[in-house]
Image (tube, rainbow, N blue to C red; front, side, top):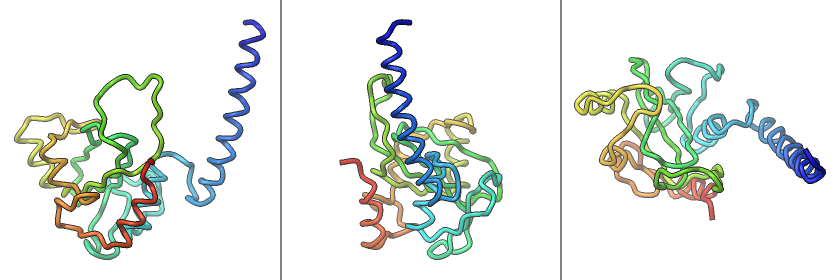
Length: 182
């Protein structure tokens, strides 16, 4: 290691301290660590009137809709990009997936790119229907399950309202727009 490495490490350490301070502030709002998943759950709870379960590690679902789909269980997912895959559970206690994604981008290397937390699209999948569609295609169900483009398009509730299971109010659309990456 030379002096240039020491300088670079020092600058990086400063940036991480700044990031940790911001994460601490975000974590204080969330009352949980500032992970992408926890951030997505908190935003979804506010926008979609979801009562989150008290345990962050609850099996199969993160909460219940308090209005609209009142009482139905929901697993909230947040992804920095929409890459066509979804972590899917076969739990019979899960009614819906609410998926917040960043922009749809081609699958390429992440080197030199930024993956900010932003919301460009929101999708609502009914769990039983999704599992049936996956069974027809023979897709392997679990982590990073590949979902056909047609299924994503049919599930979209924001910005396009393809799925009519939830119709967003102007207020909800404005709230989601706060998290666009401009």
